[in-house]
Amino acid sequence: MPLKQLAPGEMTADDLRDWCSVLNDMTAADMPAEPRWRTDRLRDYLLGSLPDDRRYLFLDRDGDGDLVGHASLILFGGEQAGTGVVEMSTRPSARGKGVGTRLLRAVAECAQANGCRTLSVEVIATTPAVGFYDRHGFARAVVEQRHLLRWAEIDWEKIEHAAGRLAAGYRLEYHAGGVPDRLLDSYAEVKANLRSSTGDVAFVPEWRGSAYAPALRDSFAVLAERGMRSHIAVAVAEPYGQVVGLTELVVSAQRPTRADQYDTVVAPGHRSYGLAMSMKARLLTELRRAEPQLVDVQTWTLETADDVRWINAELGFAHDVDWYDYEADVDKLLERLARRA
Ligand SMILES: CC(C)(COP(=O)(O)OP(=O)(O)OC[C@H]1O[C@@H](n2cnc3c(N)ncnc32)[C@H](O)[C@@H]1OP(=O)(O)O)[C@@H](O)C(=O)NCCC(=O)NCCS
Image (tube, rainbow, N blue to C red):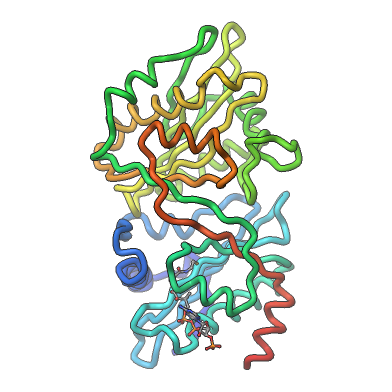
């Protein structure tokens, strides 16, 4: 059976089961300590996307109908139009036979046909994917350090203490699933500090979040549709009640023992009061009640982000592996792939 491109809604129950089994074989081979995937809400996970984004899936089955590899391509719309993100896996027993290259070609052709000029991919530094993307001429755009906090090793006394220590004039709020409308505008303003254009120290390269209130509401809704539960702590300044700091974390139905901590940012005028530490600690105390099944929390920082790294270390996060953001120009990638054919 040839390589097949399909819309997420066309995935059958068998496709979903096979998709999950490739992910778990890949995890066992490349990252055995990482949590395994479940099929719970996997269809929703693959189906959900922001209104302006589109997602394409690719399945490669061998002559016996066994799934040997798969890929997902998200083409961003709106402000990030022209860029896309790819994720792909070859079943370890089928590696080195050109499956990955075939998938990459199909992905790049689809990207080009839809006006996408740049593809990016996140790769864990210790896995064979590094050799693959180097071989295909992707350039390493950013190196991030992954930090892991193991639930069983958390010093709860220290965390409770940090969560309760708050500078005068502020209060913390915890919200699950999104933020209330009364906070949305100021929340979006604080998020804008993560953008490169502000020249801010909290700038996150490759940041694809939204700093616009209606789009933020959409993104929380899409997370929920995809089976991803968001947990948020905000620092609110008295007396006006506006958000001046935030930290966000997601637990997905497909890997419920693992939490992903994404954006943490404090508005410039409110830094150096310990707000980030208090928010992150408060979020952990809330998670203890809300997600008792958690085994670990992962987060990513740049080597240069000393302040965030210090806070994470205080909370018990430890650096274990680097992640690379690779990028390729779609036209050039296709030219290189054509020369190989
Ligand atoms: C990356 C991956 C998809 C490659 O799949 P694959 O089917 O083995 O790839 P191919 O057989 O098409 O290999 C293509 C080229 O990459 C090279 N390559 C593949 N793995 C390599 C490695 N570990 N080291 C060096 N080169 C490697 C191959 O030698 C080949 O080059 P050649 O044709 O000039 O000999 C596969 O290793 C995988 O599933 N990894 C885990 C998933 C993952 O981490 N994905 C990245 C995030 S999306």
